Length: 126
Image (cartoon, rainbow, N blue to C red; front, side, top):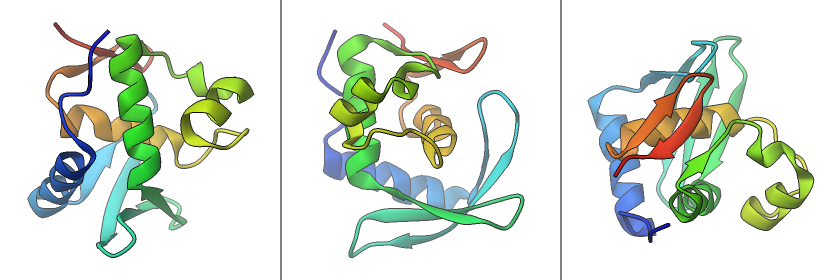
């Protein structure tokens, strides 16, 4: 489809902006709440917490790889990275689990051309 709207550095600035505006956001489907509790500037990661209190980090490298894939394809269904071949190719690991849903949920906050269809399916508008 197209090249990503933002560079990796610009996407990190967008993450920082979301952090400054307020650190809570919700999943695309199940409406689970995530709380961004800190940013690791040196390692370029955002750390968030699930409602359960469990913490995970989202590395910028993985976030940007998924962002590029979304722009390349024009859409990403929630199930796309459950395929081990896609997951390995895009983010460098065979299994796709936490923080997958948290990463998907960030995209509409980072780029207003990214929209959500029913079922949490992401697509690039335009």
